[in-house]
Length: 80
Image 1 (cartoon, helix red, strand yellow):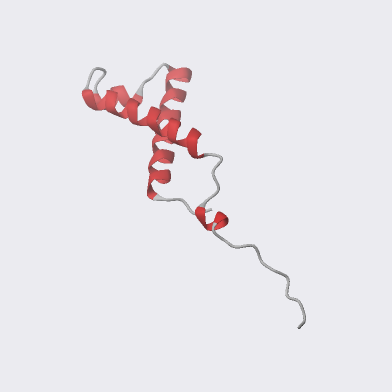
Image 2: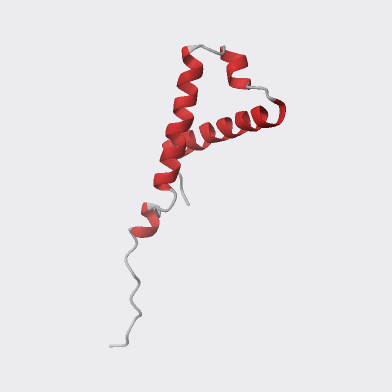
């Protein structure tokens, strides 16, 4: 299944968010806040982008790619 750039961006942000939450849950260590600062605007933007990526993934998860849906059904050949 071919992915567009938005799919890849959402995937990368979800991985970053997932790993960060794993670090928070296991070690009580927030890497994003540690890198950019606990109250920095960029930290909040990253959290918002991760949330938007999750919503995007939820909305697009069940959709078939255009390449699969655009193919016309094949007709069996009949002798003339």
